[in-house]
Length: 372
Image 1 (cartoon, rainbow, N blue to C red):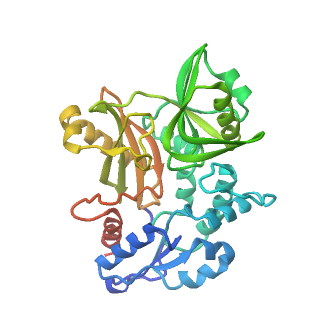
Image 2: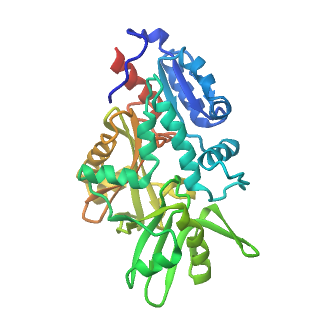
């Protein structure tokens, strides 16, 4: 990781001061504060996304007091989400219902404007804004992985109109459809079709109000088999920009599909969790289970785990100005691993320890060792 030179030539451990740009009510902020406390460091100086968006210049007063800045996700705050969407398209005055899947492209455009501004500031970031910008774009991340010849499911952009999408697809097949600019499985669809039938599976709820179709994130993964429902979903999601990935068969343990979320910190895979599901989506917040590590090794052997860790480290190395990242890795029944996604804010793994430390404490430890 290449840090920009700090304004302080020597940083004493007792005086190392972190700043944090995030949503103060979010548990991520509390976890990072606890990590600082573990090393008897001062509490991080927290600057809210809300305050930044209302008065961007005011963050400079905070920057003068800190040695390192951490950026946490602006998500899970309705007011911040609305402001980022408006920044992405100043013609919009969006009304967003809780959990609604909408304005994903405009949200990213607004967020990108902020990241571009912050990347020009003389700040030493734990994860650089320019790296975060790429990680938040699934197509841009895919391109970066392919440049390094990292194994990925076959991926391509899809048309924004449903008719063009249907005209382009093959006679039969199955793919994952993913919004370019979403996270936490928002808007992700497992889609399969033949000349007679089609099915779409996803954590999506359809609400129809007359001719209006509203999509909501659902904690229950639903199956849609009616053409009318599938069209309603695709007509809403495709204009928000999506890619398609080959739907590769995942390895299984106890009859359930699995993949891995691996957190890479300072170049090393450390914390990890097995995500298991009876349906195509493995995200834990969808009611899926954390798999048993011993069972995975007993079924698939220790080497496949080593290969997954190595690939996660290679994926994170594509973003050399970031101290940490969460990398999603799957492997097939032959043990071949593939990079699925990378997440700049993917270090939230409550209860998972490595060498007795959680992800946030490990990040602080790694940074301390680099400036000692």
